[in-house]
Image (cartoon, rainbow, N blue to C red; front, side, top):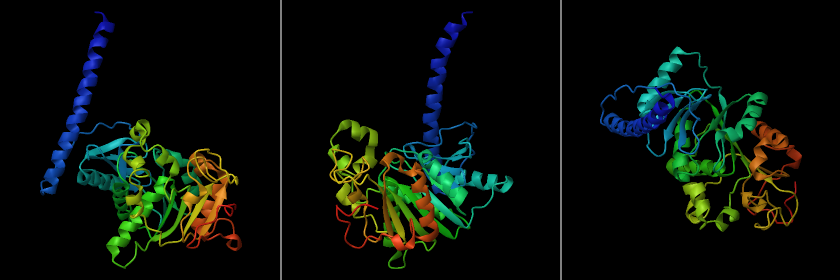
Length: 352
């Protein structure tokens, strides 16, 4: 028998069957979620212990415990439980994955979270792996559990990202202190979350466990560079719904971004050149956002570092500043803190 001909004919069929299985799995999950909502016990899902990519642009975390996580697929709306090796241990409805997580947690040596945690969020079009060096530094040098949160930054609006982040926070069992560190768009997800909490609190305030917040290169006042490409089809295709939040929808989005009621500090990228490094931007910049775009009234401290936007979280000095702010509320020393008052810094006053 000519095995090459056999392989050539069988593999396309196998791939087609796998594709149909994946599609029908999504349909079965949807039906299961409806049954669960109606009070019916969903059937056990057959699960292949498959290694995954960990969730890139189509998966959003809704529970994170160490390196375990339950994620929601933003296209099919089904869930999966991943272990620290990104192996899928269960899939189906939220209820099913959560039950499997509770069973695994009871039978395995999975330690509880430390009382103090740091939630780390990546930026637009990135993944949690982009924050790995910073997360490792904070975990090694601080008494925290550092949890890197994934969210489908290009596929869903900030409001949906914020709701998923709220679910992550709601499942932080035994935690008494929550800190945030975010890069770029991740800061806006947190600010949207805080807006939602304040709106729902009716004067009672936010989650009392929220302690401090470090913003890395945050586009707090929008992003002029993104607005330049708001009608570019390639930009729209690559950055999707998340990218549009910075362009055509910015006026509506910024109304739902709270000034954090907790102590927060801002680290901006720039080279002390008033002309900036990017000819498409006006003023000092990190090649993506300007220093002026990062500023937010009420910041407890503000500092500029000569680092590009994309790599700011990997800079050793930035990592040191971040940890110091989480621990003490300032980046360098209390006597050289640069809080931002109600008025932003002047263009000629943006050097550290």
